[in-house]
Length: 149
Image 1 (spheres, one colour):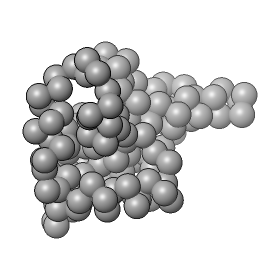
Image 2 (cartoon, helix red, strand yellow):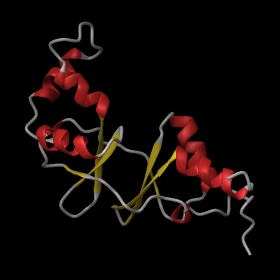
Image 3 (cartoon, one colour):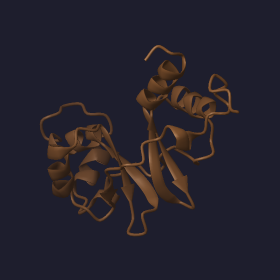
Image 4 (cartoon, one colour):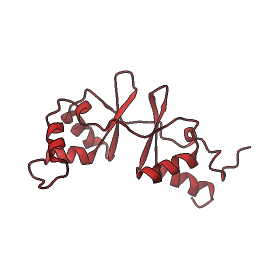
């Protein structure tokens, strides 16, 4: 029997979110803005037509692009201007999201999140996106197994 207090034994597939909202790399910024009307996430995984994880888009990038002419002193303004000319999400996405596999453990996931200062890790199997793990997922799991939730 697995001791749920031993976080090295808790596998990511036990607590990850499997119901995903994704963006396709060929979607336009307008497509993503429509998606934002229904889903209020800060970060969205980007997949290709084979459902392979190829990047990530966050609301900060979208805001920089939408308000490029209004935000003075934006860091990397040239980079943002170039991204704003992109025809699809592939041109604005971050290309190296942090990933785990389903058999990774909770301790490793928490270490990655703290080390890289991210709120989400993407779970892949054979390059295909199968889940997402958030800090909230980890906190809720720890809280629940300690009998506090």
